[in-house]
Image (cartoon, rainbow, N blue to C red; front, side, top):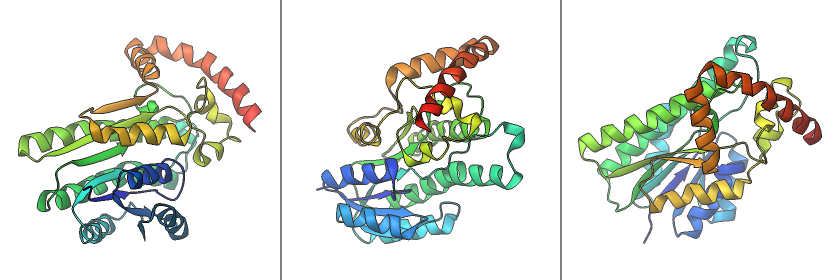
Amino acid sequence: MPGVAVVTGAGRGFGREVARRLSGRGYTVVCTDIVGEAAAATADQVGGSSMILDVRDPDAHREVARRAAERGPLEVWVNNAGLLRTVKAWEHADDEVRLLVDVNVLGVMYGSRAAVEAMSSGAGYNRHIINIASLSALAPVPGLAVYAATKHAVLGFTSSLQGDLNVAGLPITVHAVCPDSADTQMVHERVGDEDAAMVFSAPRLLSAEEVADRTVALLDSKELVAVIPRWRGWVARSSAMAGRHALRATSLMRKQGDRRRARAG
């Protein structure tokens, strides 16, 4: 019988759809979000419980883990909460840079640490930590330099965390999910930003449902990095290997993205 799953940023988008699918698998889902009403709405939909969580607070993560473990063995923790801003690297306000790093990077680190601590001391047979990264962690994305840097950090942290767990002999499987741009509120909030062209350069926007399907399917695998769609990962990695030559191609992608952004607006 599945145990307990925690989802951060469960109030909308990927988080809400992931919570639905975890509930469908029989997990008791603890839905967290910085917006308490949004977390509660998801919890109502999935028959779970909700907590307000500011992912920038490490003690708050530990409290979520403690209360989740009271409901049963903590077996799944999904670090989904994140922020997207599309601004040239040097035009971000200082506090915005700090916010992106605190939420997107430290939030994942704090959540993973709390999850490992709870999973190490409790029972459970199928323990997983899933970190939501981005396709932007794999290739250059002008307009998203700070955001992309945070997702690079998530990817690097995930693989090294798995290495630490292996060395320690702890039976916890860690995954990073790198989805392309998706048809979510977070993306559509950026439709008016001129520097959001690369966000809209994808051939199509993924649905939150298909990203959630792929994310939860990782519970049946040992896959370390899941790129959605897979072929975009091959293209992105090839671009990264091409170095400065790949940056020339981004001008064409930006033009395509601008046209799609204008239509979306």
